[in-house]
Length: 91
Image 1: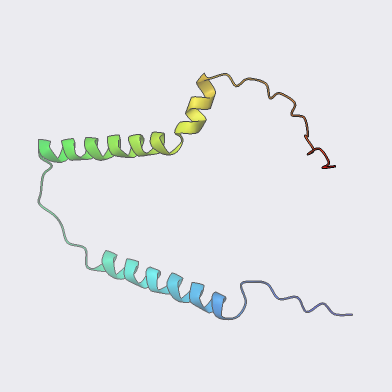
Image 2 (image 1 turned 180 degrees about the vertical axis):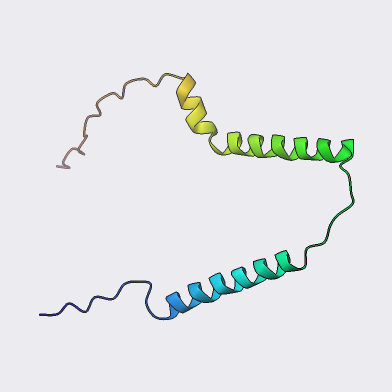
């Protein structure tokens, strides 16, 4: 018997992905074809802005994984076995 299982990348989803990839490739090629030479410099304020952006990224990453970092430096107490309590039957 022939299996007719379809992969999730068939049909409309595959067309959408292909459309986005082709569109991105065309825009990228257009951006490279109209490139002009820039006569500019980076002043000290630009370097400070880059430093601030890097610091913000590091602070955001640390804030995101703060529980894992805290777990590295703290000891967790061993879990105590819990007793299953059942309610007493009413008489």
